[in-house]
Image (tube, rainbow, N blue to C red; front, side, top):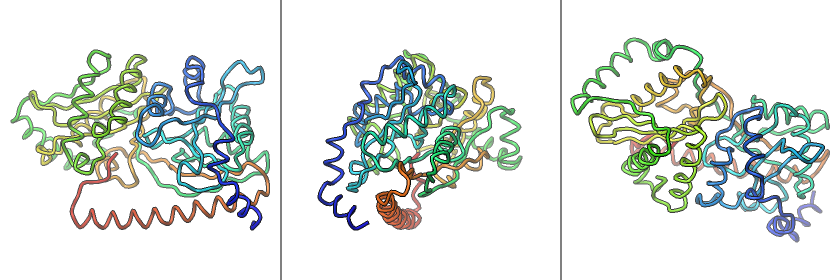
Length: 396
């Protein structure tokens, strides 16, 4: 253990990272990438090429990601894809590990071919070894999802055991049921009556309408409406609105326009007359939707515009036969969406060792555990400060 620590200090991961280049995301054939996304064992709208390439091109702190790219035995078909960065770049930890490249949305489950899941998982892990990594850190993966199941099968076969670093439970929507029935069961008659009363009050400003923009000629203006709404509220005050940073604004405009061409993105807007009071971005991949972000006009906060928009989105998704489920993308115990979307699934960060009995993994695990403890302490402080100031819930 001491020898490895000394070696790491002499040959830090920043040097390792430069010497062990991975495949640039931009070198992946886009046709192969799109075909893999259609066949992937588990949907992830944030690793669609139209989204992830836009993130890697300009998004603040997320540019120039690399990839572990798994080809089949004939080397002609892409069967696995995992965007990654080094542990050094992720958290300035000088140890040889690769980390999921964060695609802005909090989901990093890799793309694994459903026709060859074990082969794909095996080759992804081998790619990581050949890149010089001793471990993989998968952030924000669906712990019981099909991608993690395939990886676990390969790890069990090879006598390797993943380590869970952290986890939480996230809200989701089962969109295979009637929307009105789901809302009534989730919220109850009394709460729905109160929300209808608020909606009627909102109608005093003008007729309330729920709009869905999908086509490229309509989704551009709808996105600009969303960006202005997001920046007008507390996200703008904190400096976390997308439009406040040139790289983020460029990424989201490019990503939304590109995904609109394949019907994989839509902007939803709630209007009172001509005034947009809430808007959100929704991604689509296979039979799953992803509720990326929400912005509201806080002048209408007493009418719960974010909740009203989410109610309409619930009805919209449940009425769409192409959608079976939706990921809220929300933090644990989110006060707005958890009472509405009652489905739950586990999201977590996982450390995957790449070699048996590798002492470097213990060092990596210890470093990440210390980092997690520090992050948790910081979150508690921020939570207390927010609670004391009665600020809104965390950004989604």
